[in-house]
Amino acid sequence: MEMVKELGMKRESFIDKYCTWVDIGFFKRLSLIEKENNDCIFWSEGGCAVYKARPLQCRSYPFWSHVVENSGTWLEESKSCPGIGKGEVHSAEEIEEWLQKRLNDPLINS
Image (cartoon, rainbow, N blue to C red; front, side):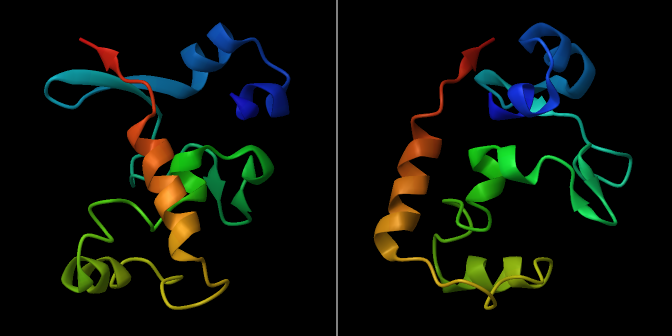
């Protein structure tokens, strides 16, 4: 975990302080804690406090499988993501690589 290194913490201490287990039905996944408004614990008005070490989930957004599924889901996500349609253009290969890495992300069985 790059964030653990970035913050100079031990893995267990980082998990205890900044993470929670999320039940996704058939499995549980370790996730960053969110604020009451659902923002990431590391998000502030100045941006991401761990930007250089942000996880793949953050680096690859909005190119998540359920968002890029079709033009309708992409359009729907654009209503809440001000960055869609702006900034760097990513190749189909790069996006596919992110999708594959996310798919291969180890799951923690419940």
